[in-house]
Amino acid sequence: MTTFDEREAGFEAKFTHDADVEFRIVARANKLLGVWTASKLGLSGDAADDYARAVVHAEFEKTGHAGVFDKVLADLSARDLGVTADDIRAAMAATTAEARHQIMDVA
Image 1: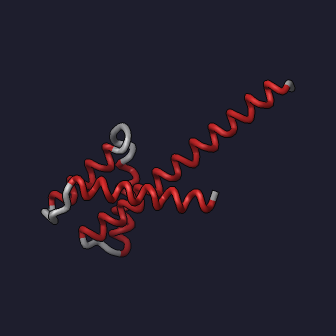
Image 2: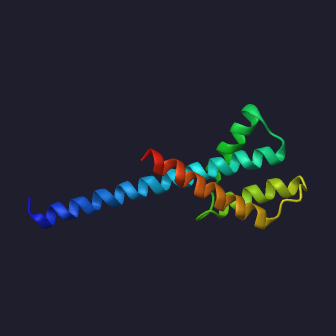
Image 3: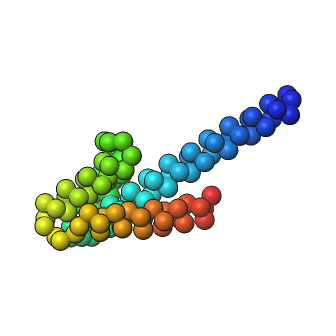
């Protein structure tokens, strides 16, 4: 194996690792957002856990974070809890930062 091949394999391994870490960060952030939303909805225990899982799965409904945002916004709006889209965006930013911190401390 040449030096070029070794470097190429190294870059591919790093890309794969980085993609895996980013996926885990997004999944953790969505779960944290689901927990945040569940508390706003007054859910606890298994119901809160189930809701958080549903938020994680919403990531796959639409491209990017739109599925998660739309689900949380719809659920909170249906209850008329006074939570705005900006509140949700702020919570998404906070949960992403927390997830990144949690995952990067482990990795």
